[in-house]
Amino acid sequence: MAVYFNVEDQDNAISLHTKHLGMPSTSQLFRTQRFIGLSNTNPNRSRPALPGRKRGARVDPALILQWLRICETEHTVQCTRMWSDRLLSSRMIDVKARKIVTCPSQCRYVALSYMWGGVSPQPGALEAGTLPRTIEDAITVTKAIGVDYLWVDALCIDQFASDQQRQQLAMMDLLYSCAYITIVALHGDNADSGLCGVRDDESPRPSQACEVIDGTELVSIFALAELELMTSQYNTRAWTLQEFLLSPRRLVFGKNQAHLLCNTAQYTETIDETVDPAKVLAPPEGTQTGFYFPSSHADAAPASRLAVADFHYRQLVDAYTNRKMTNSSDSLNAVLGALEYLRKAVLPGGFVFGLPLAELPQSLRWIHHRSVQARRRLAFPSWSFVGWEGPALYNETLDLVHGEGEVRRYDAKTDLVVEYLGVADGGHHHTLRLRGNTLRLEIRNQPFNDGYVVGSDGGILVGMLHEGNALHKNTLPEGVFDFLVVERLTYRAAPEGRVRHALYLLMLDPGHEKGVWERRSMVRLFVEPGFETSPEYGSLLGQRIDVKLE
Image (spheres, rainbow, N blue to C red):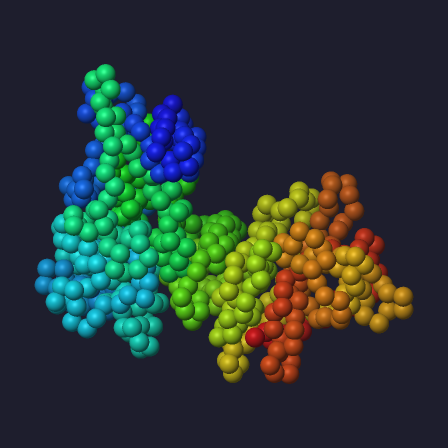
């Protein structure tokens, strides 16, 4: 067991990080800023432990090159940089000539992932050497590791609406996934913060403690990359999510040290990875830090392919919608690259405003998290998560039959799945055309949200309604409302239990045009036992009709 104790915690508490050397996945990481470990200068370097390593005031380019050589020569295809001729339409910074050039064929280039923070390059700044510090430092690092080209969005993409801008935004997946390495500016909140450890005179890095006790040298070990990411502003921004996920290698400049994170392993300045026979620094088997899909996924049977797509798509929506953006108009653009990567890998049917409606129309089942009051982004449709500000998620797998549900189900089946017909330009919004079942319910709160057949004498109870992932079933207003059935789930709660019905519904409000609806919320209707066999149930669901949502 390797144990690093932290004695410099700001809360004056000892924190620790443990790794069982025989089982790398058995890891515990507690909030800390610095650890203490045995220095790699001590004798007996053959023991299976990760010794500390001294680092200087600046990041050593030779160490970065050492990490890159290991990745290039020892790692598998998931770290391999690919090439696409579509990149020939992009622009690059020639770091030696300090000018913008058209991307050469088979270009080996570095990409930069950073936070603008309202700081943009001034005209002529590239030639004059007066770019914002983060970009200037990225040029320095690119030259230091022997790469001639650097891609930076602020300089290589038109910053006004144009065909070139639209084209480049549509290929963000290539720009990052094809990069030799991506520099991640983790520290700071704008483009003038710089990369810590690149300059001596500005933004000095904290000194590294070193003590010799009874002939044994101890050195402080700074926080690992995963903790620096978790506590950084970078990790809260919408644009940086896809940039980080799509890059096969990430050179992360934190406040205290630099890290290299690839899709196979991780390296850090103050831990000597050369004494790591148990591969402790490698991610647990079956996990990875970014997007990587073997070609076997794309060629797999539809059920297997969609199971992979189901998992990764839901994870992406959850992570992305929890992030912040300066301009609401970027709500879709900031995730286009990740969606395009998923399309090529596992969802060839593509996306409509962020939803894979052609292959997974049940993706309309996304919900707002109960902890937030979501706000509309009126430039985008109400039926997509990009049309709302605030966390969105799927509280169940898109495949309700084979995926993991809230409770165990038996003999589960789905039907009445809504059918995607296309999108038509509908004035200010884009109108989604669907075919499915609609129903109208009267909601009464007594005290829970119960749905009744409208106009029934005394009231015929249809079932209980549950909005999103609300803790209590009493969040809906009373009144008469229209709903669209996204799908119906039938199942048994026990092997010999009775068949139950649950309807997954979009709650609708009238739209701006007659016959067009807006999404209000997503609710589940748990049909009252016995009602599913009544004639009123069939009448309530009616026939499938064409529905328009904006």
